[in-house]
Image (cartoon, rainbow, N blue to C red; front, side):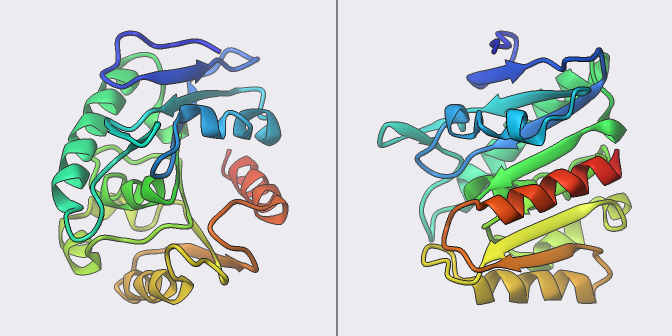
Length: 210
């Protein structure tokens, strides 16, 4: 594991085993940190994938947060999105290829995957949003990069989630789908976490997109 000192957020960088311009950017949930998802790269086991695990910009009870609690989310979402755009612009300038790269987010990171990823000017190979929600679906549809709506989106959510209700997420995804935003939505009998069956499916989904 390494650290990329030229970036504006603390991070963990895990280089690929095979030289490659493929990159997965991983965004944790509220109160967690980049270390909370260091299990994911070895689990996915993709030799040609580089991984960048980012710490969110705001300190939160021993971990980090991408934005404030409701109803004060917007300022943090906008600020975090700007920081992510800066980071991805730097990474995709020469070192990595956007069209071979993935954005993965859990909980707050899932929200950023939508709110930032759908607006970002470059289209990535895939977007994976786990156990999150969308801040404003109608606004997202108005402001999104029109080229991402037929790219590869995967959203998963637990039917027993007691932090971010399943029905809210499902309804938001259906609103986006009805507007032509192509998203695979999959539910799992889980609470606000990531489970083995889901991880296996995500790994297969990524490998199919590669």
